[in-house]
Image (tube, rainbow, N blue to C red; front, side, top):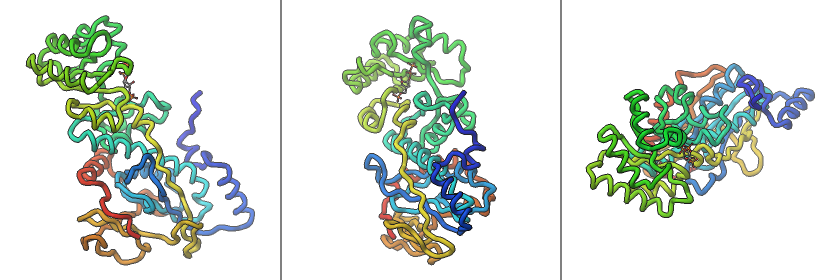
Length: 392
Ligand code: PCP
């Protein structure tokens, strides 16, 4: 058996920390049934990040669907900063409190993956970034991981089911297994070319048996214009300077007229490697660093009870709205019903970011496609996301 919760078990509130279940039991026994507003904020990002990309909203909305609650959130794929209420749930506590564990899990992990993908894509620029990390995580959540990698900015995902759910073609080259079983890099590449549909780009893996430079030349000479690229997944024990290996491979290919052959690298790629290898790389396969991205540490906190401001120590009470300047990206946090302000930093017009996604259990659609969310993220990445302060 697979030790996974079903979607219905999650929606029913069974994936909950027991103290929430006991809280509901106590409140029911004592007849305490109050309306609350609860907001999600982050006090600090992992690894010194200055912003994060909000993700997991679509799934959170699905979990809340059909409960008499209202969900307001920043649009999925919006960059945000610490101490900003990016999600607010309004309803009777007994109608959603037991879902806190599941809701936090959805947005914490999704936002971490989307943010890491966005950071990698931002550094890679026009170079490709493909999600290769499903193999590091439980397969039941591969589509979730790769969906968030994709909306964060990855150009494609490797897993067949993930790609199918995104409405994209899966992306991949060839594994070492193919070359080992065919016995030779050129033989494997030719077999790939003979068997796989022509729409798939021919990218030969060139680190299996011999030196990358000589394998690249050999496969380029054998394939000519048909060869789209070569992938270097050089083992760590052989890398020495990966930068120099790439530089040399590029040089030798160019010298022989194979300028068209792209260089694709994978294995242990993270932000630092992207920055370092960019001069020679056309596309990255990024695995663990995206699929195992640090989570964004959201907390869900009550800020209003029966219409009155109420919050624990260290939290600002009351329902809020976040107004983002369309010109400079600065944010101003105000009480929910305060009029929209001009930007405090530059005087520009602001837009409210918290919008209703679920109203009284009804999903307010249509929900943007993954492609639309990804486009929003890529647009935001063109300038430093959320340039201004959090306001408040
Ligand atoms: C790639 C590489 C890494 C995988 C992808 C992701 O696999 O070897 O192990 O890398 P990361 O998690 O370090 O970012 P392949 O080269 O396709 O591996 P193999 O052919 O050996 O299965």
